[in-house]
Length: 93
Image (cartoon, rainbow, N blue to C red):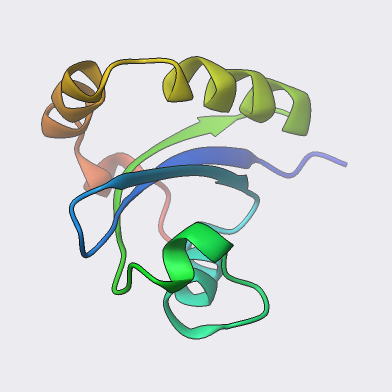
């Protein structure tokens, strides 16, 4: 299977950041905003959420490893990453 994986940051309504991985960014962001079953428990009470950062990776393993790295960054470093990120660089569905 050659599907791409993404690691992403969401900005929650309380200005906190949520990191996750998925194969479909559009679907996953929609789930975080609308579904009480599929959304992460963290994001359900912090809606609405907006996609503010994403990286495309080759495998689930790579995405999980990168998510772990990103989660360990300081909030300041995460904000700098987001500030320098251009969402239009991502492939459009």
